[in-house]
Length: 233
Image (cartoon, rainbow, N blue to C red; front, side):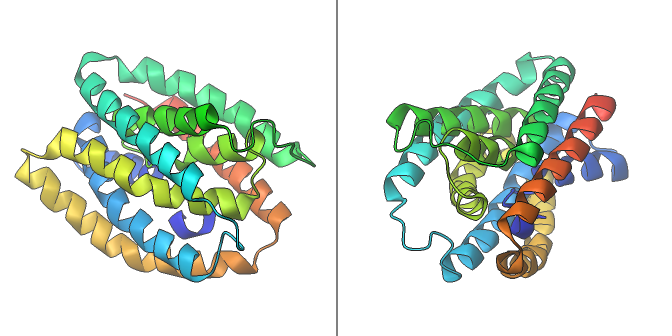
């Protein structure tokens, strides 16, 4: 899923870890953040080798998003022990439904804030906070914002998201589990085994049309939002 849809995998890691282990949700968000670092790194390299940017210079956008993501990841991780994550997750899941609708039924996208410093920082900050709070890579936030506000093509938005996921998730992981040896070990296991799947998905995605990717990502967001709404605890 990381390679195909440009997400870090946290939206899959956290629910599965919660269902299949006795570890609590908040600890699993830290484990997931560390695993996302490995998976997103592998997917990023796959996208780069396949020339996902199609000649575009994305250094400015990526640099600003990473800056915002690091700040957001730190803030989100610090807020985790102090906030009622159940309410936050349910509100977030409802927002995903609206975003999914826009992704599926939008026929064209205007670059409302193209090359805008504030937009890129905001994309990084919001997705970073989500990463820190929920243990996600932030792709389910970054990708829709980059497409709907920045006017990027789906595949380019996914590539940007994957690259910027790595430092964001790493910040969240360090903040959350740097003193928990068991969580670090579990995060390494999940992340290392996830690399193979991310490379497979990352190579396959370039044979899929833009419209199919948009609709697939929208449907994915719907399933994620339903899962988050009804299983948050």
